Length: 187
Image 1 (tube, rainbow, N blue to C red):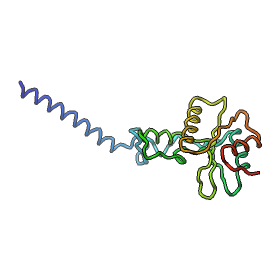
Image 2 (image 1 turned 90 degrees about the vertical axis):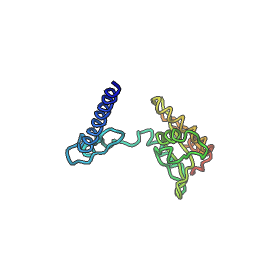
Image 3 (image 1 turned 45 degrees about the vertical axis):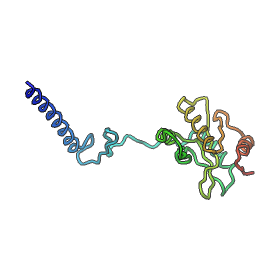
Image 4 (image 1 turned 90 degrees about the horizontal axis):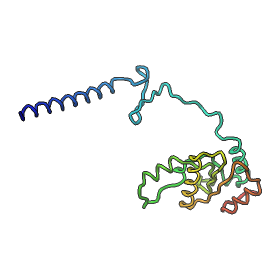
């Protein structure tokens, strides 16, 4: 009786192993969803057909309010000394300290979030100030991104300001905010 049970278990195990081997070989030999011979990329077990990517270029990178604020910021920074970059990932300007616990989670948050504008030194792109925007139209995701970005900037010792896109400040008010935060402004 014991021999019969062992034999049944061995047959069952062999069946599962052969099924796994068949799936592996059929996956390697199939071209996935693309046409035969096209390059196919496997990301996280999901097939991506590189011959037919469902992407298109956006019509605009910045909305009207963001463009107006970018123009105003560019006018106020010191020419040849400072430059303004829109939509920069936080991971490009903020790094983890050596003693950070849960490093992968903190790094993931930096990689997923961005600042609306970053003012840097022109000569070496050293971050000088982070500028975040807010609007009544912001969804919860944008509010969380803004709040996290401002807290991360403060923790990293990076000066920062928040500006309403619903009512852009005039030149003098923005200049005052930049100066208050520690950024030398032009004029």
